[in-house]
Image (cartoon, rainbow, N blue to C red; front, side):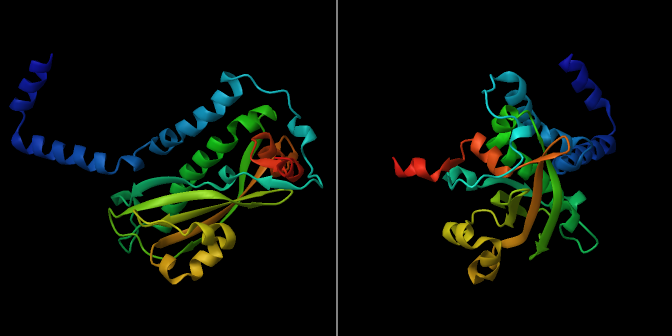
Length: 242
């Protein structure tokens, strides 16, 4: 079979072979923009949700219907609640706009992949335990700070920024590879403090803040209950006893 394939290739006109090789190389270099590529990139996040829902024994906990309001109990956050989830990518040909740099619209597609990985990595089991409420993107704001040139590499990094009784906020940074955000500045000051830092501004391509809500039917699930179920929030009184 292999010999027949090689015979066919050898009999092909040179310009067909050359054109085909160029086409294959071009498609390989721009694979993330091919049809269904975005869906396939989301597949690991979907797998984590399904594995938590169907593949493991769910704990007997409060349902999402019972977790729609916040409590007055004080909680301390585990460090894992604010950990960054990162991916590295490149500004491919199909990402470019009329100014020959990464189009602003493509920032949102990269952030979508990264945020899905962050949320499903941290909260899949908790969501399954609460009856699988959906996490819905309710709004996005993005500040574009530096251009990304054709085929330039960049890193997308997301973490949970804050939450209220109704919504969770996720911050996403687009940075140069091989650089790190100042951890204390990021955690204590957030994106505003990073944007004002002269050193950090040199490595930031863009900053995005996304608002998520957890919905069980028409009811909104309080984010703190999801975090508690995930073991990411601990009662402050229990820490005092350790």
